[in-house]
Image (tube, rainbow, N blue to C red; front, side, top):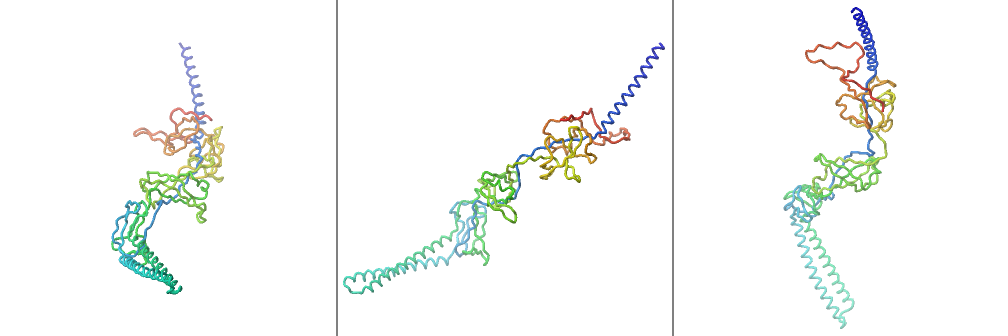
Amino acid sequence: MVISAALLCVLYLGYRVYESKSDASLLREETHENAVSTVAVIYAKPVPPTETITLPGNIQAWFQAPIYAQVSGYVKMWYKDYGALVKKGDILAEINAPALDAQYAQAKADLESVRAIYALAEITAKRWLALRKNHAVSEQSISVKVAEAKAELAKVRAAEQNVRNFEAQIRFKTIVAPYDGVVTVRNINVGDYVNKEGTISSPGSVSNLFTVADVSMLRLFVSVPESFGPFLQPGLTADVTVPQLPNRHFTGKFLTVARGFDESTRTAITIFTIENEDRALWPGSYAQVHLTAPVDREVFMIPSTALVFQEHGTQLAVVGEDDQVHFNPIVVSKLLDSAVEVAEGVSTTDRIVNNPSAALLEGDRVRIVTPAPGYDQLNAPAPTKAAAPTQALLPMETFPPTGAPEAPLPTGPSVPMETGPSKEHSSP
């Protein structure tokens, strides 16, 4: 009995010694493991081989005609107001021109007068020609009478042309639409005085009576920078938006380009056409024009949170095959809102440290983990190949529930807290 008790005591003491050594070994391993920094990695995403620029544009009607008065008078009546849809030949307004009417009547009276004189001259010339047989008159007299008849005929023709001129001016008393379209401007009212210089009501003020625009198709004018010049060719299309219709996109088709750059802006005037059968777009609208063209380049996109700025320039902290950190210099080609485009120094297989700590140094050994979901992870680029990080990082501080005793403050170096078993990320 005593021997059994002694044996049990020895076994118990041996177990206690073994357990203490095992706990010390586990504690040593955990201490070494926690001493290695944990990082979250991302992968660069290739940017499509296209170049997109956004430019301001100006939308104009396919045809737009300011209409001026060609006769002097007072507006008798206008028939088409702002926004009226008109057909070619529709009457827009009528002008009362009594002075022109009087001149037209005088021209017709003058025509009748010269016609009568010509008729007399013609009869006289015929009579003198009939006397030639009897030699009753000289040849000189006959030639004079014939010439006088021809002169009177010329006066008749001049008077007829004068009447036709006044008839053409009389037609301008009626203002008509030159083509199908919409009235975008009406600058007259009943009783306004107008003349062929376009003066309305007040001397020296030149203005058009109406403006009629054909808006079934529109022209889009864009000043395109010279770097985009090689792509300004037939077949190029533009995505167009306007402030008044923010949720609608229109397609602009390339029409022509100036084939010369403005020296002050280094841009070329480029014209696109936009179908506008429903007349949703109005001439004079401001437009945002998005142009996309294929380019031969190899560019990658990464979030701006991965950048490291040092005295050597912009760098990325990359985890190598040996799980050590290496700082690689990069060339940034474009800055975006929350990301950057990198032209050199990165590939899709690089494991890039996101939000690198300032304490990371070249050659530091790190452990890759998956960060807890947060606002900075919503727009992070997805890896281009499968990764196996499974450990989740919790916030640096946790608070006990209300009423629970507070945990003792740690005395060693602060390390991220972990929940559940953690597994290291294996090298790809």
